[in-house]
Amino acid sequence: MSSLIILLVIIVVVGFVVAGLYNGLVRKRISAENAWSQIDVQLKRRHDLIPNLVETVKGYAAHEKETLEAVIAARNAAVTAQDGGNMKELAGAENMLSGALRQIFALSEAYPQLQANENFGQLQEELTSTENKISFSRQHYNDSVQIYNTTVQTVPSNIIAGIFGFTAKEFFELDAAELEAARKGPQVSFS
Amino acid sequence: MATFETHIAHNRRISVALIAILSLFICLLSGVVALSLSESGIERTSAVFLQGAGWGAILTIFGAFVSFFFGGKLVAAICGGYRIKPHDDKALFHVVEEMSLAAGLPMPDIYIIHDETPNAFASGRNPEHALIAITTGLRKKLNREELQAVIAHEMAHIKNYDILTMMFVAVFAGVIVLISDFFLRSYMHSIHLKWNKKSGSRVLSFKKGFWYTVGTLVAALFLSWMAPLFALLLQLAVSRKREYLADATAVQLCRNPLALASALKKIALDPGALQCDNRATEAMFIVNPHPLRRMAHYRDESIWSTHPPVIQRIARLRALAHEYPQPETKLVELEEDNELEFVIEPPGPSQSPA
Image 1 (cartoon, chains in turn brown, orange):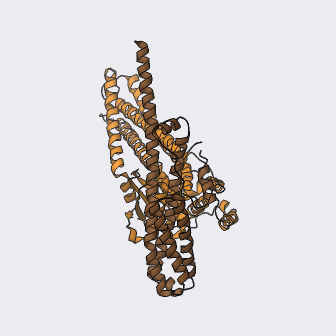
Image 2: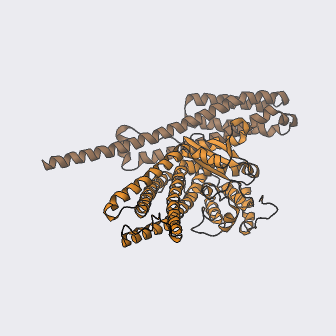
Image 3: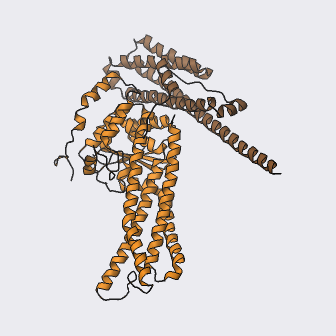
């Protein structure tokens, strides 16, 4: 009788532990997924702003055709990559797009009238902020993925992760240095 | 490895313990005060004590309730802040949006305080009901990166639930002061009556028995004198601790420790006095808004200060700069600044508003 009770107690305790670990995994996965959807929103926002930008710049600097076409091409490639859903391709395409945008803003400095255009000023602030938002939401996504992956790969939650099919997620990187930083995780001392 | 998540969880446990201790303390204090003020004698001790403790608890719950639901807006209103919309200041909204994305939190309300002294605070009960208030001086005197770092620090207070903890601790400390004050005034009043040979004394009547009266009186006097001090020191200690953590979390959000260091320096060395300054809200700001206390605690640690020394906060941020490499130029700029940092300029009389 008493051994039966002990067995029951053990089963209940193990059940609670398993449920706790499982819930923790789900929570962390959802937070990583939410973080990803934020990046998605910001990328879309940037893709939507670019045609406007190109139209505005065309009015003042029509003969910078090459740069403008490069931006359009980069933007279209990024849209395709976003629909495709391959994270590495998307990161590459977005990287190209950022470079092309930088070029536009660099050449705009040679056109004072373009600089003075109110619409262009607003677009520039919007795009700069969107660029920042992309990088901050990416940072948050990578932090969330790092927390999730650590949970998936460490004892004892890795056992639960194995049983219920939780697998490590990919980071969203733009270059090697960042990859290293994300792998390492934040090293901050408290006291 | 200690992650931010474990620190936040640890923080939350400390907050709960803190609030429990303060509540028990309030009940003890109000119980003892009730014993001393009550007309009944030794045979009803426990009933009177419990009654007093009950009133203390009701007062506390009322205060906690009000601050939980209206605290954030109340604090903003005390400082004369008003809420702004995205089209009032697009760049500011962008900066806050960027930090809320980095923290993975919803967008807080933004309040502006018309004051030339640069400062900022966050308030509210949780990330879904939070606000960040900044002064017009802060908006003018900081560049975009510094502004972002300050917003990151405030966002960190929201993420770590410091806003709720500090609000509760402030309210509880207020209740303690209220009860102590109430008792000390009653006591003074009864001495006054005795002096004028009038009757009506409650505290100093010995109907209850000499030793019982003296015993409860001494206990109540002791608690009334010590309690506000105890509450204040506790409040200050918690506030100091959380500032360091908020700085570290802010760096995790904006990845730019030097911008925060330079913002802290600008805010700390500004000679202005915040007009809405009062002791109850001082701990909530990023740097103490009172010019004299800000200067006094710029360099030295003290149990009386609301914040850790700015010098030390900057030193820690600079140590973090090696973890988050920034462009060369910026490092050089701050390195050159190094000597300036230890020069404390006294606030000039011409510059301070009054």
